[in-house]
Length: 231
Image 1 (tube, rainbow, N blue to C red):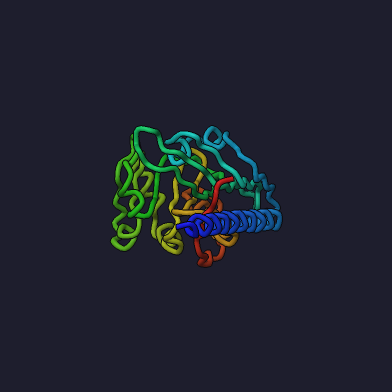
Image 2 (cartoon, rainbow, N blue to C red; image 1 turned 90 degrees about the vertical axis):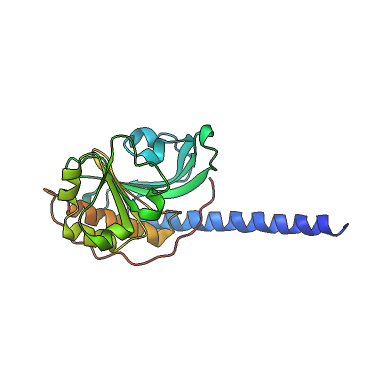
């Protein structure tokens, strides 16, 4: 019994050191990736992201919301903001707080609210006020993604075969549309090469929007997810 407490303390300290080391290592890798792509890197807390991008429910539907490890710039002429995000669900839900990464890119054309999310994620959430489910008529796509949109006709115009094929090239990501921005996220936190993949995915989505200038970025490469820690 006397040995249990010291052993438990050693294990606890070891876990804390491991978490802090991984958090610092990841922060350094993100900072290096940002610098390599001409982005600024701000590791401190930023509570204004939900106001800067108010059209995304994932940034506003909770308490104690803030971003950190914020990367901003305009690679390839596209305004991009990538960040880790902490969200504490509203107290009435009883859910635990969680952290995820997201990348937001500014669209060259006006958009309408739409979410194209992995089915296992969206099935656990309400569709969102004013959003209706849309069926693009593609069984393989519909098995992977569930689509909800404010304007189903506009959603079908966006989800043409080339857009669906592009989204299927990175099925681990979900894509959300607001009036002027596209948000890319996965279920966890980005490592540096996932930031690259998310940025390429966003560029490809913007290129395939009706009326947008054509671009042809290379298909994103696969990369593992990594749990992120708080700031």
